[in-house]
Length: 640
Image 1: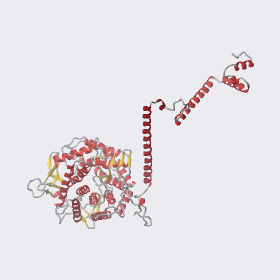
Image 2 (image 1 turned 135 degrees about the vertical axis):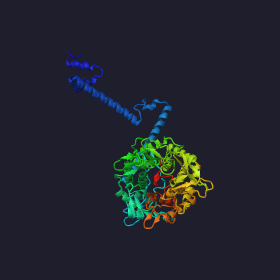
Image 3 (image 1 turned 120 degrees about the horizontal axis):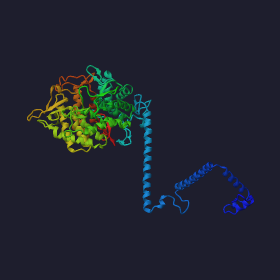
Image 4 (image 1 turned 90 degrees about the vertical axis):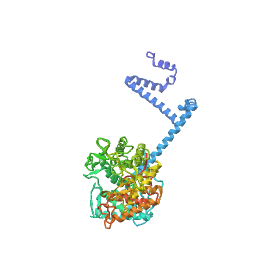
């Protein structure tokens, strides 16, 4: 339109176009003409790039303006809605506000949990950085500073309970009164507790003198022997020293565990025995002291035992080499003992909780669930199971004694340990008790002592009862205390008397290893003891049950029975200048005959349960906070 006109006329023409009046004169007009010329000189690609940049800038401006409106919750104009709520009716708006409040509350809870987690993490890091024994224990000193001055309460030798949380879904049930100070110099003991302490110190003294660091001690020959080569007597007994408040013995044991204990041994060990004794002892010591030394040793051992679970079935092999990891069935045959493969669950589960490593718990859960699904005789199981096929040996004996006992014990205790959440364990335990009542529970003649017999070959009743069965009164009392039927406590009361009579009716007042109960009417004696069964191994099962029965009933007779048993141990098993030994014949007070062997469970279990039986302190290992494993090592009860 303007191409043929003079410049002056072009300016006049432009000035007549609406919106261009401001460009019709002066320097502004020249600048605009220069811009137009530059634009015309640009290539089409350059023009496209400039347009794209301008478009992107415009979008950015719109986004920023919209964001500002949302953040401030206001309006740019009175007629414009600030957000989605302005388009909603009153009911929808209220619903949206409620959802917002719920969301904010959840976020606050999450933030609080994160803050607590940070605090717990910092505390754990602080504990992890500490070396040596628990707070207050410094170079063999307890509760006193370098100059003997009393330390403040926060630095005393107070031993901590397990950490509050061992995982996202696990809470440790703790006492509200704080950590129990096992080494408090003002701690009070009864006279009978002091006598038990003295017995422990007496045995410990000679073990330390003649067998320190070795598995087994022989007090007659004053020699030692190895079973697993892991200082079994020390590891099995260390928590007894803690519970009894024996600081010198504890420090000796802790130093040996820290400096000398190693599981890097080219030696086959039994999965069950080393789990309940060594792994259980280390876990218990950790929970009572919060000392990382024990946890680290426990984890090392747990890792070395895991190859047992690599069997063709869901039943673990019974033995494993600690160094090579080679696992296999026992040397004597193809089957594992049922009690052995089902009495490792408390320990492996606890190891998972304190390490946050679920491999251990998963391994034993698979075993428990597998055995749960196997056919049983009214809840009763044969004493042999095959690790290759995963099946019971159907022709095997059914007993609550050797090779069967702790299967039933751990059904109940696992249920308790897991906060009573695993119902299949409770069901299996209740089924087993019904099976006992239907098939195994009988009374003797003439005094009607209640006992638990056996089914030979799974069919034929035998009036035989091992001393091992005497764990049942305590276990059934524990079940009743946790809400199981009242008749369980009635049976427990009668069985406890029977177990006491197994001691009381012997000339030495010590029980034989095995008894047979008289079934013939008119018999003069309830008990029959065969010569090969008359030995006593310093076993704990009866005093274990007496401890439970007294804790739950406060009936003084259980203490009286326990004291009688303790005094018999002191009279017939104590060796001056040597310690304690098993004996050959409980029927011969004049010549009981020493077997020249101190079983580690005498220190780990028998003396521990006697000490607890005579305690007047309700806060000493409370049974609503702890559950004992089969070797008397207390572990915390968890709520899942």
